[in-house]
Length: 291
Image (cartoon, one colour):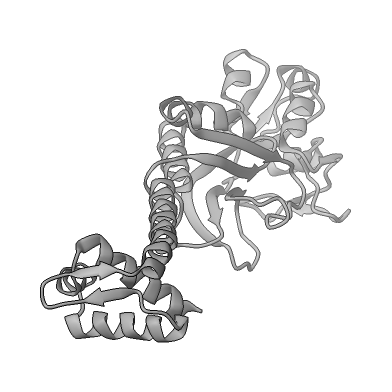
């Protein structure tokens, strides 16, 4: 079948260019190879498609009808190729991004210029802090943090989350600022749920604490922290507005909180559509500005 389609395309090229030699130049092959393809096509079809002479080619009645279908096939293939090239070169279609709830506040500022510049680009956000089935949701791009589990998806680092220890002024007024590791151990802690009830070791120390409040949602932990329930390790950029408004205070402690890498996960490394390439570039640029 593929050989037959190739011969039909060669036949359309011969007629379109007016000779075997011109078609051979366009197809980057030899004149004899083109002639062989046409003979094979006529043999397969059981009809003569061309009248050949030393001066010119002319279509038989059967060839004239057959050429219309061959030319339409080639035109459809060229249109499909042009559409694919457009998707490769210009951000168009629906971009489906999976991310955590807390990262949602960054997506708008990061992608607004891209979306404004390309009216043909649509956006769907799959927002959840739990497990997301990236294949089932037809995700083009997933945003993840920290250590990544083994996966067939390709990870590209696009930024860093700088974290510090925060508390609300009301909590510190009632409990005081913990100035020692023992004070940190005795504090009320808010942390992401890790699926266990075990104590957690504080980053940069040998001290373990038992979280009093846990959640699978980082934004919820921030809101609880602002409500004065305890101490929480939070992303500096995420809480900048709350700090500026006086709802949270950054604590200077002996802890060296880790910097978490931000990853862009895609199904493949090469031949990424333009919408994915441009989105990753926009996110990297935005994250570099707000670090």
